[in-house]
Amino acid sequence: MGQNMLEVRHLCASFFTQKGEVKAVNDVSFEVPRGRIVGIVGESGCGKSMTVRSVMRLLKYPGKIVSGEVMLDGRDLMRLSGREMAAVRGAEVSMIFQDPMTSLNPVMKAGKQVSEAVRIHQHVSSEEAKRRTLEIFEAVGIPEPARRYDSYPHQLSGGLRQRVMIAMAMICRPKLLIADEPTTALDVTVEAQILRIMKNLCGTGTSVLIISHNLGVIAQICDYVYVMYAGRIVEQADTFTLFEHPMHPYTCGLLNAVASLRLGREKLDTIPGVVPNLLHLPEGCSFSLRCEKCSGICASKMPDLMKTGEGHMVRCHLSGKGGES
Image (cartoon, rainbow, N blue to C red; front, top):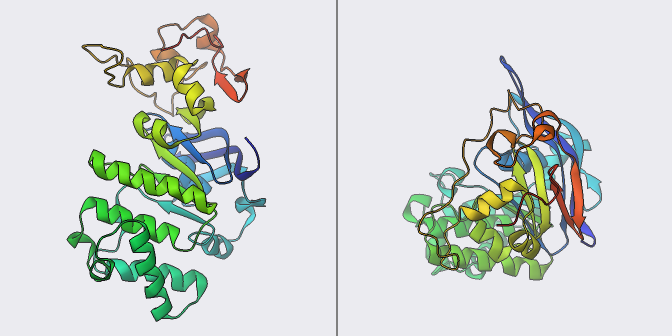
């Protein structure tokens, strides 16, 4: 996949509760190349958000990063002090959170919040910070930037709030932008505009890591995709290969659950059951209790990630016999 901006190696993060250790991120490894867009996809509760929060070192008690390396442009973020990591956030790696209404300060004007990010990381004057903020507002498609600068978050639509979040994440020109469900609750027109803005970011040299359960979003924007289930990567491939030749039964189930005029189905397929309790995972494959093709070895032994083609890996004992969607 070429030279990487981000390399995550064997990352493990858990929540230590009275009932036991919850392994939310279990030996996860992935890469984000320079100037490319990589997606992590899976159901709610599969560990996507916990993975990126671990990368940003934003886990709160009782959560804890247990082990692993997070290499950003050759530097291990796990070895940085709290103060050093705070300087990296916003300047070298930025994150767009799921809900901009709760992520933005409701009693502070939108423009001031973005200007503050510039002043903290680049130590410029308030006038220069405002000038840059107005420029970035225009770049992300915010109409009437000067008026929106003085608006409070509740005075903006969901799409405009999301643009403000993107502007805040972009303004210091980070090496890596992480977007956690960036189009949730947006209508399809605004969603398309947001995705176009993020794709244009790659032209400036920024790498993008997008987290989503929306396969349509992943298909539109990503170059490479990782599929997560129960805290682990279960399949990874370039976007075309993953959508045309899925090999893990879970990936096939996700794709079959998407509405498609091309397939001409009257009813959507569903994956039976729910994501397992991370306190009581099956002894073997985590997906075995929901898999129609489960065999004896599936229930007794966790499969390793196996290479099935160039850049294509799958965690399945059937190794491609899971069937294509």
